[in-house]
Image 1: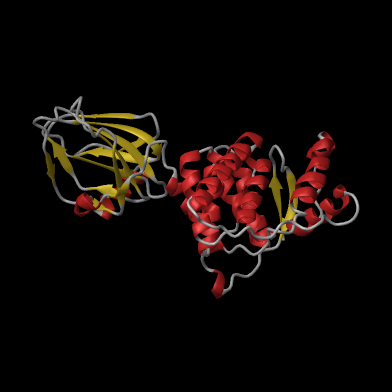
Image 2: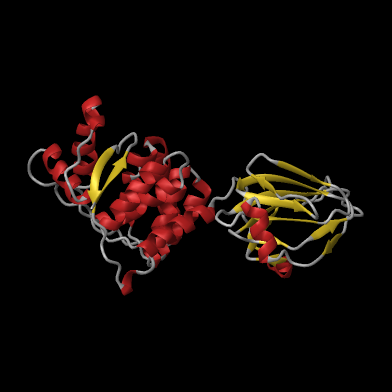
Length: 348
């Protein structure tokens, strides 16, 4: 048992968490749970185009209409009414489109009646059961209204609805929080609460990896970069952003999985990189590596040997702009060794 802090607009609590033992049958999320992760993440980000795709994939995977509706409704407590309402409007439009195409989605279970009594009372009981111990804290003395809202509304009116179990609700909550910046404390607390309610370490890792890999930057990730895979250590993705050739300035978004980097190489006409997501590194031959975060710009002169890629523990995306494209050619060289990569990214 250990104390965990849970601070946020609607969830700011202290509770003691017991971790359940993982079993062999729960080492990965099932297909429906994977779709809930995507739905929750895109809802939290307000990414309606990708949310529409995720909603359709969720229905195709067997999620019912009411299961998805319940996820989108619950998420207003974590990412706000505007994004929840937008997501529900998106979902309603999608269901009409599918119906017009003759697709019949299973409606699923509606929530039953809430428990008898006052919502603040059964909500407090739900909160204690969810967290593993009664929740107390100085914050509630400072702002007693938030304690009442948490108990009566979040844990009573929402968690008292029985058409979605608590484990599934926590999967959706962890995914939503993982997709939002600045809520690390709440994310860590909900990870612990999720484990108390049956989510395994492997499933938590899958949620976090799914969310973080799907949104490295605001630019499209594109498909796997198979055409250049032999020049990369690890997996990368490529999205060409300029396609019609009117300006003849090739620009692409390149995304690297953690630890991925390209080989040493050079360009006869030079290149420009603009970091747009995650954490990465750039290094010229014979010089110290440079750590890159969104907003950093790298100007690479012609004929300079260099490499670039992701940090060991972070996805990374940059825009690659080809300079002097009419005559610019790449010369691919040897891979960056594991030892050199480790030295470059550890600051040694």
